[in-house]
Image (cartoon, rainbow, N blue to C red):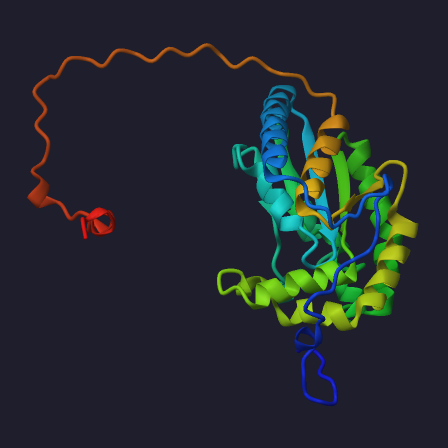
Amino acid sequence: MASKSKNGKSAIERLPKDGKSSTESKDGKSRNERMPRRVYEEELYRLQAELVKLQGWTRESGARMVVIFEGRDAAGKGGSIKRVTQYLNPRVARIAALPAPTEREQTQWYFQRYAAQLPAAGEITLFDRSWYNRAGVEHVMGFCTKQEYARFLHQCPIFERLLVEDGILLRKYWFSVSDEEQQRRFRSRLDDPMRRWKLSPMDLESITRWEDYSRAKDEMFMLTDIPEAPWYVVESEDKRRARLNMIAHLLSTVPYHEVKPPSLTLPKRPSSTGYIRTPRDMQTYVPDHSAVLTKPA
């Protein structure tokens, strides 16, 4: 449960309602400056067309790709994954978002259930959070022992080197967001009944444990940011910019090329052979809800 202050208010209730980050990007512009929608949508569509080409190359070449999405709560990981996969074949680009481990899985080697999600030839697996749960939430919230945490930090670079050595294209993205912007997003979720489900007690704990998560992230980077599988940080104060930057970078790291699809021609419909459609009153149809919406007042 979210911690409460002496006056009984939860962390989310104590959030500043107009808090804004004053951090700046390398070009000196405020990271709160939102990209214009038209520019964003045009470039996103172009990049998504390139992702379709990447998918075709992956299938043709038999490549195996793993893309890890990690970062702060409400940093925009889910939205980025949604834009990456929007026009891709779900049989090729699969999203792995594993729930809490079962009792049986808790007795397995930690990486075992994640290894089961790794791609076969011609597949892409996108991890919506990954084995790095142990370095973040499990460590900070005390869901694993100190020994398990230390073992993970020792084994993780070895595990990832084995993946890369076996030919898997491994990309790791950390979505970075300021505490002020995270709080703003939490508050907007709290006030939006359509997105309220995105806000959990665990998310609220990340407010009161902000520095604990920061220290955990720093230690994780120090030990797992390896040449074979480096971390790439995505500035996510503006979700639109973050999505474009992440997708553009991913494409730039893969030597894909366009694979021409086979030529297809729609066949002519054959002449009727006397088939008679089943009478409508012999089948149960979905009520025409749309007719109510278009009925004249």
